[in-house]
Image (cartoon, rainbow, N blue to C red):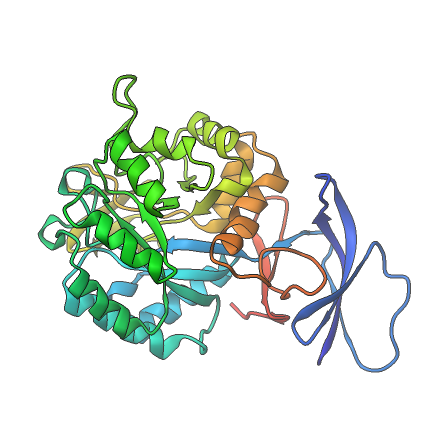
Amino acid sequence: MSLKILHNVNVIQPDDLVLPTTLWIRNGIIEKLESGLSSLPEGEYELLDGQGHLLIPGMIDVHIHGANGFDMMDGSVKSIQEVSRACAETGCTSFLVTSVSSTIEELLAMIRSVKRVIGREVGAKIAGLHLEGPYLNPKRKGMQNERFLRHPNLTEMKEIFNEADGLIKMVTIAPELPGGMELISFLKENGVIIAVAHSDATYEEAKQAFEAGASHVTHCFNGMRPIHHRDPGLVVAAFEEEHVSLQAIVDGIHLHPAIVRMMHRLKGPDGMVLITDALQAMGLGDGNYVFGGHHVTVSDGVARLEDGTLASSTVTMNEALRLTVETGISLKDAVQMASTTPARILSLDTLGRISTGFDADLVLLNKQFQVQWTMIKGHIISF
């Protein structure tokens, strides 16, 4: 049915108030917003009752590796589809398929699987690829497997780009490595978001990278040189650059709530993005897994390598939203960081807002931030 009328939902207003709203959705696009349900149209339509729950724009995860026991680096279509399904179940309507450092053959196999899935997703839509590595600094490798890390190689990157057919939207690199600045120039020329992490860049090296075109920091504070009052490093350089946005893993583990609040104060909701950085344990919980060539143990929801290094997260986007609000950040700003800001960064011009003319990519949440349903282009996804 081309027309859906969604009523009895609460929508966050620009002034931070949450008010009852009715949405008219035609052919997957928000056609009209009104404060009540004053009259119904003639002809056929579907009336949906939101039961007074909170309605937010679909969340967008720019950094996710796996979910529900599936790792997208395994090169299978099934794994990517299962992550698409898991994203929708947890309030995410678009995502970047994110790699870990690997052989070139494994990365190309994953890219080929993405191309087979895109346009046929069972849940959340694929907005592109995020290459996290392999051009990362072993000194700040985190859970990245050192045997796959290497210096930037333009010949190799061009091969990857040729296979990806324009799907690469973000690349995370360590700009201080030999060839790092040349790679930044190449990525900038190709319209890719250049992110920095797993990096030991000094303040000066980071500033140079940001001036050359880098504009994003992957999982800020994690996998990078820490702040020191005589050696401020990458993080302080990013704080000083207005055009640089930051990813935040708000899971109560990777970042202390005070750090989350500080990031928000310094960057605002338009310069901060909530991510999951989830591995395949998302949705399954505690147990033993293999991720990025490592044995990973998840205990009490925390994923670690055998040496204790944090290995991605198990948080979901709806949980990250709840935890962000619990740090003291307003609901309006938290939603902006989960939906509106990533849409803007990825140039997804019809996503990230509940507004006339925008896609009806929507999520209905109860007071505990549990997903009641997820809608993509006006269609409610079956879980």
